[in-house]
Length: 114
Length: 112
Image (cartoon, rainbow over all chains, first blue to last red):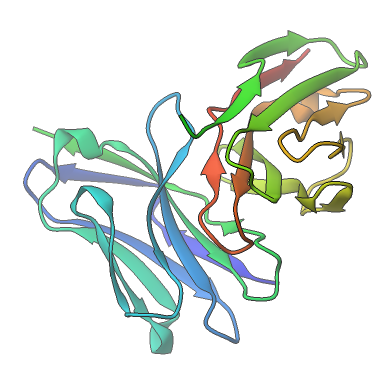
């Protein structure tokens, strides 16, 4: 069965510093990959997705992620953190034959300090 | 405005009292799904539906029922809620499978 591992349940980053959130997946074939963000008391919002096109994917709010097949990774980055980036981030995977079923990681809570 | 709505947003109930959480989308999406979110576990899929009258189990279906009689609605039914079903529930929909899923605002359920 597909699994998704997010390294670090909590990440603290200074305003203006690099944001790096790690995601590794287990799959024998390249899946569809997603990053979602959840702001307090809200639903999930799609940040970006990889669907076998370019390996470097740009998303909203200055985030991007790189698909590395050899490392089975899909890490999320943002060069300069803003206070508004404080939220919980989820990596999710969907296999091409799984009828859209998303397998989520446990999530990473990002705290941004002034 | 394109959206997924859920009702109620908050619900406190007692063990064994049947309840329904409604989900509706106005985007004409074929695919709909229910997830529960628990701390440290991320989101886990309960049930999904690929179209009207087509539903299937996700990873954690025990204790839940769903129905899809209309394309826009996908209610989640707890026939006999138990305390271990205390959780945050999300409904989601998408136009095609493996495409972006749009999430509702969530329903926080507490079963005493």
